[in-house]
Image 1: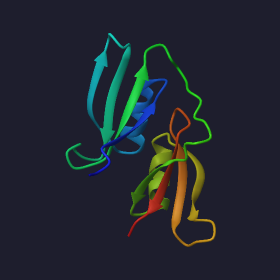
Image 2: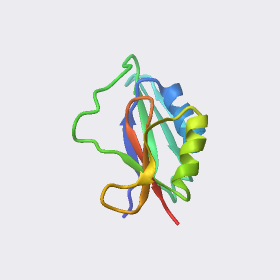
Image 3: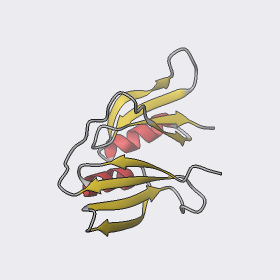
Length: 127
């Protein structure tokens, strides 16, 4: 068994795809409209779905925002250099909400940014 994807509901599909591809460097893997259900699914990730866990971005036609709620935490992405990744993401228009630095009560370097819908993404230094 393995995790296939995580689904996020988004209010502006094009804006979200631009964020995940241009700021986080993912690729849009596939997209399909479901007219009978009035929604579109787009899958983004760092590699093919056969070998990688991806994100499913769900756009329900006519819904422009969602309440994230108190149960959702964040998505985590490993990067070689958190400081460098933050700079690149800022230059690409990413919204950093916690600058790169050691985690609370630890030494792992982390940072947080926010996607267009307010979902938090943690960057974790990976050597």
